[in-house]
Image 1 (cartoon, one colour):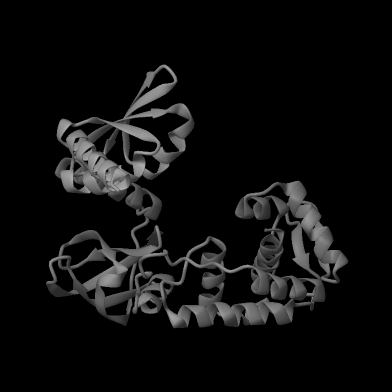
Image 2 (tube, one colour):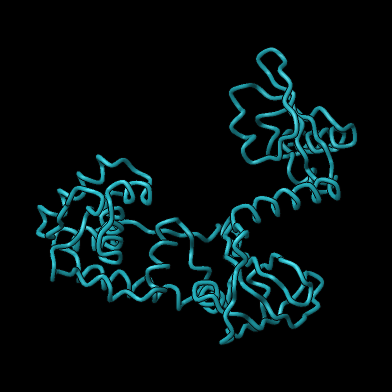
Length: 320
């Protein structure tokens, strides 16, 4: 949204004092031309932005002028950023309050037209991350974890494994990741002596320590998570592998977005698609909703299960 970009420009200009249009364009993933158009809009709204050329040039606020965006605390800025990226709060009341405080401060700082935009957006757009049939996982220590990551502080945490066992660990937090509404912490664990991934909802106690955490220069959160994802998928496929073959019309290929596709072979106007459904029980639960759009070709025991279900339905709906 352009409003978010205008706010981001003000935040960057005021925090850095002076910044080049090219740097703004790169930071906000837009063109330099769009940046200059946004600068014109802000200037027309009464914000005195000055653009100078040359090696030491850039975009800055007129000397002595401030839009008071510095009143935002660091955690509030982070929450604005995360919300702008579509990341839910994880069921934390503290996080919601941080967002509300940040929006109130922005509303008071921006020119009148943008204040109205914020009020309109809050009244007309609602982001509900909770799924229909399950509750969103509550992450009671999300604020503590985010504080430690943001401020570079060590953690003493009690963590519950899948089997229910709990253990006390001293962690060096390297970063937070959110995937499909669930939060994960990438951290060096002194007990394991390596970087591990921790599911945030499994922390049963968290204490932020005064000790500073130093992240190795060579560490990349994006690279670590990408490698961890690949390892997880590979391990899952080896441990839970049950290929199911579907025959489906080309027009129904949209349904494949919800499946783990392993192979697709053309067959005229149809496709033979092999998907992984992990085990026989999971496959039985997943294939029935697919029958409207696809034929279950194999394996034989799954096709036999489908046949029996269809016969049962036939008797049910044709009985008097």
